[in-house]
Image (cartoon, rainbow, N blue to C red):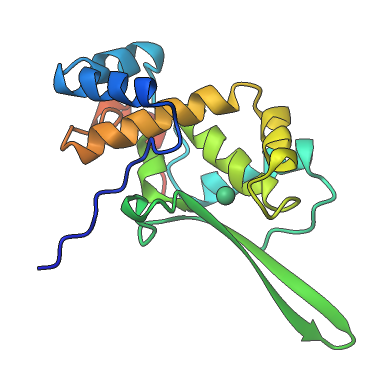
Length: 184
Ligand SMILES: [Zn+2]
C-alpha cells in the first residue's frame, strides 16, 4: 500500500502553537481541554436540519447572495484530504435564463461536534458565496458572521489533529440525549 503523507491540520500556524498542541495530545491533555471549553454537541443531525440552519444564517448575513439549491452532510468528503466543506456553482441555461445552482456540502465529521465548530464551517462555506478566494475580504466576511472565527478554526484543527492521532471522537451521538436527536 502506498503511504499518503499525513495531513498537517495546523500547517500555517506558528511552530510554537503547533508544538503546544502536539505536546497536549501526547500528554493526553487535549481532549479534556476541548471538552471543558466546548462541553456540548449541537443537535443539527440531519440534512434537513442542516438546511434550515444554513438558511437561517444566510438570511441573516447574505440575503442577496443567490439561492442555495442543496445543503447536505457529506460522508464522502474526507477531512483527511482537508476538505472540510465544499461549495459549488453549476450554471445551466433554462429557457432564456442562465440559472446557477449552488450547493454546500459539509463533511460528516461536523455532525458530531460542538455548535461552534459547525457554525465556523458553515460560515466559511457561506462566505464563499460572495468571495471565491481565501483572501482578506473573505476572512473579513467570516469574522463578520462569527467574530471568534479564527480561534474556533484553530480549536477545530486541534481537534482534527487529536482524531488523526487516533484519539476518540469527543462529541459522539452516544453522549447526546436521544430524545433530542430522534428524527427521520
Ligand atoms: Zn474555503
